[in-house]
Length: 323
Length: 256
Image (cartoon, rainbow over all chains, first blue to last red; front, side, top):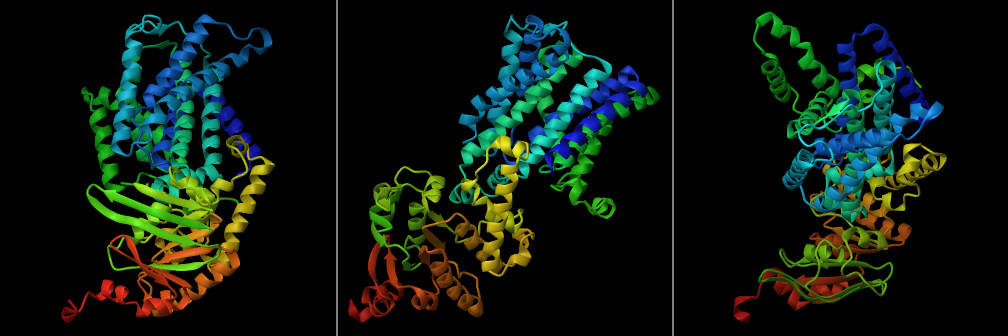
């Protein structure tokens, strides 16, 4: 709960992860570690809208794309800081990417969050596709070729940067949920009419959640751009949005812990099944992956954590030090 | 005059649900709104609380028109309601349900919440204490952390009233607070409503089918039928009113 303690934990975890990754993992595994971090940001931020606010958004890849392209374009055309402060460049790019995402989120959210349920899903889906098609046809951003030669950190610094942002995302959203704003989000999910009659401006609440969510999607996009060093519109297809939704649903919508676990699982699973391909000679990864998802939805329809957090699990309560 | 409803009408397609409704409430008054099924009582509540907009007529709170205001704006001006079929935030804890209504008094901004500033912590503590005081007033403090949807029906009704009171209303609209309660629970509720009115200094307008409750506590009763007021007055006057009896029981055959 206490914020400085939270930040301390975030910094420690990020340092440990990056340090361990740098020392013990090869480039391939490090890459996976990067993607886990980026996916944690995407899943946790989408959960704010889908899980906590009860609005079904399917356009997360669109906001991610905006963040990625904004950040990449800025880094290719301008040098922001030089000399001893140069290490702040990438965090600044990420902030700009986030800002781009947030502005897009505001523009999309304001008219469309008045819609409910399926309609919102369709509008956000449409938005994501529009972004992709626009990027595909804009010569400034390289069209279908995309952008390449995007500068970026590597190894330890890149990992640290990603995990600091991932930690910040978790912490910010967690902290938000403990506040009066968090209760407003939840009340909208539970019963919109009742929330409105209790003095909650539901449209504003939803737009706020949407803007915060797309800010972090933009940040994730920026991190993605500077890790892969090249971008093209194909990375931000509809399937990417669905992937994030799967992470949220698998982990348990309405649980921050769940989203983190979901993001890790969905990133690691396809990679972990890779040896199977070498062994059997056929690519059965996606078959097993989808079977696992189906099984999961049958056995635990509310997701792994089902709206609960780590601190609410019996196991944790038994073993956690009392503080 | 706290609330003035002047010639309010609403129609859905060709169906006139409320027609020329006149209703007045003064500060701290306890008024019952009764009428047979389908008379338009809940619709009247929906008009006052801003869920529906009247097709014509005017609704004023302390002289200011509420027309065109959104439901949340009306709630913030001091008209807070409960629902006939309970609409709690069922997966949230009881205390959080109550705290949701206090969101409009929230004194800190988003950034303050993000960094858990002193202001944030102080405000959160105060809001929790206020919610706990309400719970203690209802003698339900032991249920503070329970999931609202998991509690018995009667308790849920009380939580709805608490949640409404947390919005610091000037006018409390209770939509069938005794529905589904047994006799002894209803008696307790009657006392509770009177106590609420004294302690919180609010006017109460309540819809109720339980005549014992209505006659027992209301100072004035307004009878609605087919969307218009057919009678109003003290409980004793209403009991003997011919129009009211006709509305409820129909007209005797030899009287036609």
